[in-house]
Length: 242
Image (tube, rainbow, N blue to C red; front, side, top):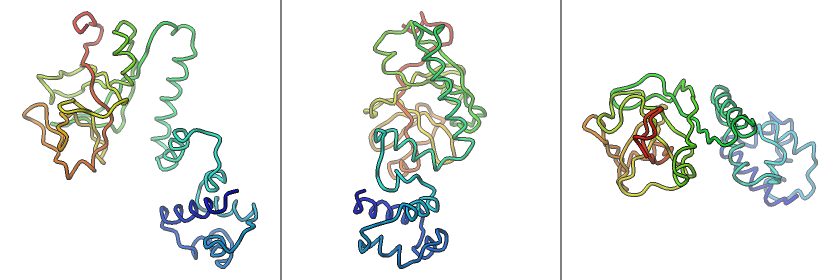
């Protein structure tokens, strides 16, 4: 075990969780002197039982706290982020995983390229709610290969707020594979779980019609970019949008 890496990761976990050595000592049933010896490098032989107690209090795996992993950094990042989500959010992700798994292994889907469509419930004058989203499937097999490769998911418009650019029931094909460029239309979400469609200008997110508000640069930290909109299509009417 790399003790230096272990100490650094332990310090980071304590800072992230705003936990003092005294609090960790009480919750892990370990002496504060023992913990200080670990943190400040005096101890060169740390018992497995001690690491287990620390990991239990910090609500993380032993592999995570000692920095050992059998997975790629991307998979580890996903796992770490899942730990901070609510049970409902995790259930939503598990639902999507089930959909992805079934669509890739079921023989009846061979030859079809199915993407998942978010169906926001409830709407506002300027935006849609992500909370309580449901999902549908959309077949993009007949679209050009370049568009199919770039598309990661889609969202259905459930509000009149984006007319005349996008109408209710339009399906927007969205890519998460690249950063937005000047004048790209993007989908973003604020900290309250509200979805917005905006035009990316580099220093702000601008409305695509007269109803929306401009999101200035100093407020961008409050919004998460979900993807770049590639194309708007009508359900069951592919010929009109080739």
